[in-house]
Amino acid sequence: MSETFATQVHTFTYDEPHPHAFTRGEVGWLPWLEPLPVDELTERHYDGLVDRARASSDYFRLLARDPEILRARTLVDKDIFYNTAEGLPRAERELAAAAASRVNGCVFCASVHARFAAHFSKRPELVDILLGEGVGADLGERWNAITDAAAALTATPIAFGPSHVARLREAGLGDLEISDVIHGAAFFNWANRLMLSLGRPVAPPDEA
Amino acid sequence: MTAPIVDVVDTLTGAAPDGVVTAVRSIRPVTREQLQASYDALFDPVDDSDVSLTERALIAAFATRLTGADATADHYARLAADADGSAASVIASLADRAGTSGPFGRYREPGLAAEGTDGLRFSVPEDARAQLGDRLAAALEHTHLLVYRPREAADAALQRLLDAGWTVSGIVTLSQLVAFLAFQQRVVAGLRVLEEVGA
Image (cartoon, rainbow over all chains, first blue to last red; front, side, top):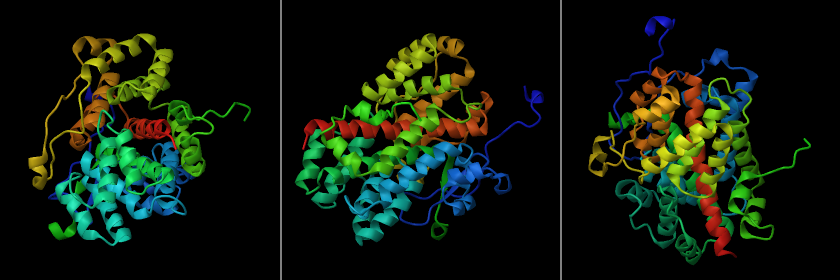
């Protein structure tokens, strides 16, 4: 077998420690496979990266191996989370992302979006309860309605139904805001699977 | 561009022109366009040399059927049947036997060991492997992993894909494909509920 290939491809191996558990700390991420080298990036790859500065990230240079889907993914991501002129506040979009990541078990994604949720809501203690206890934690009714909806949408089979919409409406969310919860939670079912498939988390520097 | 503009998510949600979904999606045109652009990038790709169009359709049918028996799964079942009817039928039968619930799995993080759970970890039976080939069988096993127990994804899973003939770029596309479908199927499922509940 092996002599038929000039070089047999292997996944990378690492000694870095895993995070201890879910955390708002600066979790790292290492790719299992080789990102495109910076000096091999063409305009097609930069178009996929959208922001040229993302060429410094191993994650994005690995995804740049398929530039067209990376570009569309990036633009959908930015619109779902950053387009806040109308609809759900940024903090609660990040809460939906963190809740989905908590359910799927993406410690890296959960750390990033827990930091955003804590920053934009100015309620880091509640975000820490979500990370520590999971989506069953009591975060107050409005946040409970959002995390419950995000968890139901993240379950397989998908468990999101009319009762979740009713609870979100009771909590004061309109149709656009409910749609924002749906998109924020659903998007992290994409992001979690990508990050978990292609690499692994690393403990924050202060855990080591 | 003379082709009619078809939006897959609008079609799958059954969005009425005067319904809630049409209204909320019209306020988010970039999300709507780029979700469709994501679908186009995966199913009408610029470069299919690492993952063929038939492989994409068959893997999509498996992934979405594992997630649910819904409009999205029906869409990809048709796409797969058009691409390769006999493989699509083998895969539909596999999906019926491989269904479980998730997300489940063991954590590598020591503080999360108590949250670990077990469930059905799928491998393609020998008869189906003989019909589909090692390369597609390895992709279906990785798809089942990502659909139900993404937290258990690891280097060994990618090594199995490499050993079955997948390129590094092909593994990136495969991961994007299964992960994108997890998003698209949930957007459709969520918006269908919103549409049915009404304004």
